[in-house]
Amino acid sequence: MFKKPIAKFEFTKIKVLIKCNKTDSSTEVLLDREWAKLSIPHFRKVIDNVPKTEGIEITLTCSAEAFNFAVDYLKASEQDHI
Image (tube, rainbow, N blue to C red):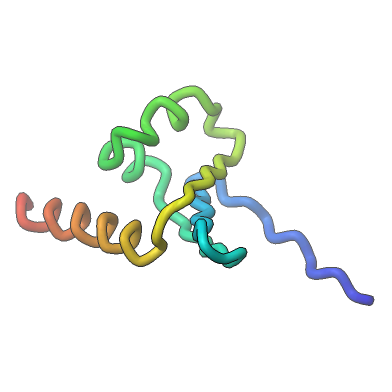
């Protein structure tokens, strides 16, 4: 049996693991660390407390579709203010 190689963690990104309550499925989303710190207040304290030389993985139980919608909305809102 072959094992998948471990991917190098990018410290400029945070990994958000989204788990669905009703199934065992999960979705991984990578977000820019600085963008997430500025744009998602719920993540700010976690990001501030982890050194930039360490990776961050946040696990959420929610709808992946809803999370992606919220992220897209935040990004679009920022573009409206440029």
